[in-house]
Amino acid sequence: MKISFDTKKLTELLKDYYILTKMRPTVFDDNFVEIAQYPETLCDFCAEIKSHPETCALCKQSDVSAFNICRKTGKSYTYTCHAGLTETVAPIKCDGVIIGYMMFGQVTDAQNKEAGWAAVYEKVKHYNVDMINLCDAYYRLRSTTPEHIKSAAHILQACAGYIWYSDCLIESGDDIAFRIEQYITRNIANKLTSDILCNELCISRAMLYQVSRQNFGMGIARYIKEKRIKLAGQLLLATDYKISAIAEMTGIGDYNYFTKLFKSEMGLTPKEYRKNNREKKA
View 1: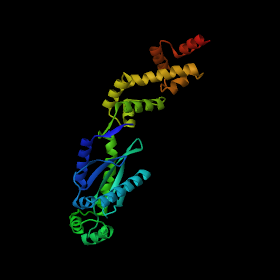
View 2: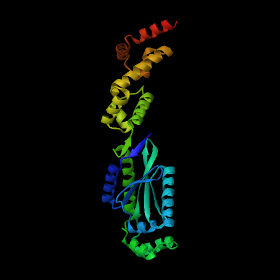
View 3: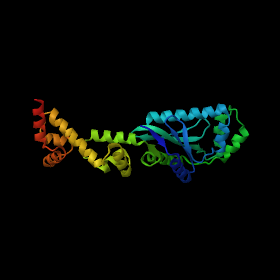
View 4: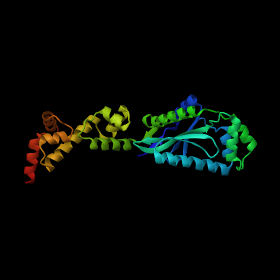
């Protein structure tokens, strides 16, 4: 499935998240490549850490480690990074498959900045960074509470889910058509409506109609009807199932309606179709 992120719309969502929580969110793709963030600039503390190649590499390692844990569990994950700050990462999923990650960080839950800096210093004291600048930057960090971080993590997970259901993702029409066709085929015996397809496949009604006409050459209702009649024809010739059973198997439970619909499409009743075609093969 070919999916790309609409970075403009994605950034709008990240901005809303930041305004609400005051925590900087970032989105990564499934290869851990950063594709959107808000604000664009890092806080002074992280900027200082990442200004040096060695410690920047540690940031990358910390992120990747968190992504892998998130990928393994399929759930959001809150942790302390290598430099002592609190971060949370949540998976962005499509049909149960992780296609990216949403993260917030650059915050501390230390209510006492002196004690907080002492703990951070123990983690970073061997780093080749300017400790005076780093200390000043730490004291400028926004402090929050564990409860606030927990709530922000819940909202982050909700936003990660929203990314798939909203228009922040761009999927090619061919891929959507494939998913539509596969869903209809697997559920041909069940009730199939545009509302059901939209809900199950997480696409808009307008997209469903557009993709159906562009890829199937007809409206979605007509496409479903044709697939049902085609399957019915195959079953009539390849099996000895009762016609009422075939009606059920193709999602048209009403025997009389099935007979009427089949004749309008094929020119013969199901019974006549089976008899005539078998006589031709005899």
